[in-house]
Length: 208
Image (cartoon, rainbow, N blue to C red; front, side, top):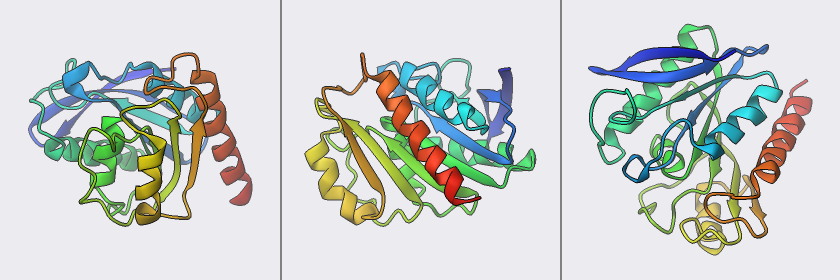
């Protein structure tokens, strides 16, 4: 059951959607670029959410400041980082101390800017990080990064360029490319969800 929620990021009231799970684990999911129509209802965001929900996670997706009914204005990834921290804090107040951070496109970049430094981040998942569109040069080691997924026809997150960053971010992170998929995963959302579900299932087995 989806619950419409609000929480504060600084002085901005942020709108989100919460789906309580059966485990004491949660995930914060971030959406594509606000200036290009990205929001928490994006189909890729919903596929990421579905994969986590199947594994019993509590999921929290939200609109960055200035998107939908979230207050504030686009802040070039700076204020958006505060929005992510506020979402992590919301789950933490619910008693969820192990939280994944999963981002798609612009959302993956914002998450990477946090650089795994927030103690509430347990694992990070990137879906189509915008390496061909936004400067990732300032992002170095991402020890919590565990999975990267992109498409072979993604011009905004080209696999060959992600490969160059992969070893800098975390060479132990698994990188999977979906053949034929573009940045929007049109016709390939089922494959994306299957990859995420498989990753979460294997990780769940290894932790038991």
